Amino acid sequence: MPEVNLEQIKKIAEFLKNLPENGGGLNFYSFQKDGKQIVASDMYPPLNHPQAINFFFFTCMHQYGFWYGDKYGYIEPLFGTINGKKTKGSDLLWKAAMRAFNQDAECFEPKKLAVVSPHDLARTILTDDNGTIPFPDFETRFQLTRAYGLWFQEASSRNSQELVRFSNCSKNSLRKFLEIIREVPGYNKDKLQKKNLLLAMVLANRPEKFLEVKDPWNWQPIVDYHLMRLALRQGLVGLDDQEKKQNEARKWTDAVIESSIREAVFEAMGIIIKESGKSMSFVDEKFWNGRRYCPETEIPDCQRCLFNSVCKKRIELFQPIFRTTAY
Image 1 (cartoon, helix red, strand yellow):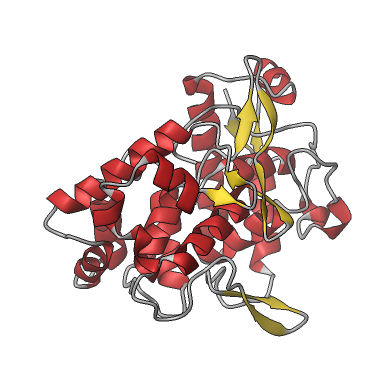
Image 2 (image 1 turned 135 degrees about the horizontal axis):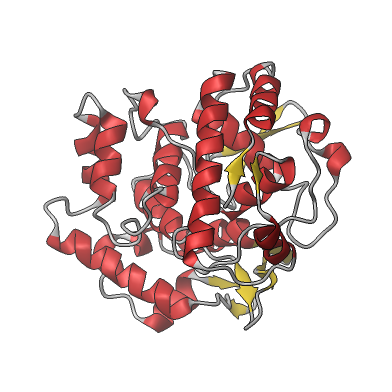
């Protein structure tokens, strides 16, 4: 069974503890380059747009499964082309959704998603320069989208904005938001709440501060397959010989092993956040940026990675290969 490596965890935590603060993480609006703020207008809505929250609810719901497999295991990541540029995985989804947003900002209204057709979802939202993005599980995405829209049609909160406003009325606003969102299709199957926490972070970190977090102690780690890959390669979590062999071969794993690895990474990241004294958003940003230098199909660029000096460099390891809508 996977085991957390407390010595390595403390080493990473101490490393992060000594890093300067930089604003608390991704803000899902802009990024810094050469000391300048660059607005990511091809990925995220403009400030104070009335449909921004609907956009984020939809897009975070679809933040999972950006890779292909065959009967043996993992094959390759999902790529598409947006504005002539090859784009991968999560970035592809953000940019495709933003292009749809620019064409019709109201397309993410729950009342529209409740009746969206497979053709409209494929041809007006989940599309790139070449047409429909070939997600490996389009039918599942369609069913989640319809169920999500119908839930809001039937719930007392008729839209996502009302849900956020209701959460902000609580003195434990983050906890209340996570409690409510766990009932929403697309966000209701994952006990570790990856997409739920991602959505909360988006809403809290945006410059508008849509979600007013009054209880930051309720943040938990956001564990997806990129984070699991980094945690295994850094040595935060160790595998037994059989698990290691299967993982290195990038073969399908079962639900028990996948869950045990993911829960071990969740535990490890929780300790890192506590021991480093840094916020969840701060730690999440460092690991999210780290995955760019420790990719799935290319040789890791260790020299450019923030964690180079403290990483075990077990680069033969990979994320568990398991198909889920959770991450």
